[in-house]
Length: 589
Image (cartoon, rainbow, N blue to C red):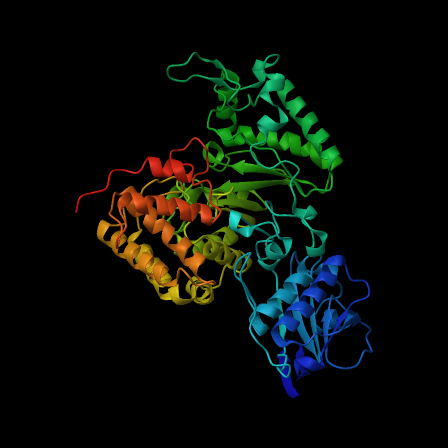
């Protein structure tokens, strides 16, 4: 046993550190299902580390002996300066030592889980690196549990990464502290009903489907004047925002949708995924009167949001600042129950949003929205949608951009890193990017390279030095204005550097291709380099012919469960076989 004196802002307190084997886990009597799961996870991982299975019992204030107290007890709340769990901020965690008890709790529904994870990661050394890889260190049963007096509330209280490497295990999403869209909801891990959507983005066509309405009400849809086409109303465009009957039907259908599921936190009232806004005289005149198309768009959204607030006061109406509505308004302020989701689709991926240059207009737009809206969401793009597998060294922009989002008042960030059997799995070091984004969304102030080093040593093992070299080299070269749709690395990755990295990575994989732990991870890591080199017609290393190596890469893709390589099936090289067919002839040395 050790004795510590913790100095707090309001005084000091004596705490004791005891060997792990002497502890018990005490769960508050009124624990939620998620808090019970937190106690079970604490028990399970400590047993995996030490071989000691701590008993779980019901907490009472007079309970003697060293305890992990899971859930917000009166003692833990009072010691940490709180009167009730309800006053904690969203997802706030508290880890607080009082005498021989360590209190682990947080805001409901998920905070206590996150407090336990914080203890397991920072004190014990557990690392949840991927859906398949968890690092569990060995601890002696006599390991002394350290004292804590920490509380933290994440500035972004909705956090999610869309990537196929996350799998479908709700526990892994919880371990990464993801709590937003595109993940399985499970009440054992706090669920996500409070943060879920009834409809999720690009909802005009969902609420007013042209197949149902266009034939009888073409005037509800955008009037377009476009080259080589007859001017007129278009079903595959936006809505005519000034049409009163359309607005009434949109409100009616929105409320009907919410009546089917009113327990959600959000509904999206947002433009379709195109830039074909209405050009009818009435819409153009109203845009001129209000100041911009953004203002007209917000006028419509506010009308829907007003009706939503009357019947569903707890539901927020989300809408997009996207493409033609990305610029802030001139005159129309979003209602209190409207949240703006800023989309960074035009961003230059290798430049911080705060750095003067190709992202300057996006920076001005985002900071320009801040005075107009009480809260903001962000849809960020961190991959290459037309070639998921392409090297994409945006690593050093992720932290600064998340800090920028936070400073602009963002409460939610959705990181789109691909979807489907290709999205995510085919991407450039996808497990690292997923884990890094997760850590930075929870705490944007963490150091990017410290996190990268924490990941690559255990995950890539003997390949860690090569991965570090690959990252450092490509980051140093990628300084252009490439974005999430750029389809080549020719602008920043010289032939000689690509060939050197490719051959070194392939050689490393060959050295460990029979290794049960690292073979598949190194095979996946070399794919972006190998596929880029083959697209340039480079001859492969060693005894491979060009055709043999191309076939080998197709085999590796399928072995890794990758069946699509682009966002859209119509894109060139969407499947491994199609990618193989469009390769150029090999270059003669």
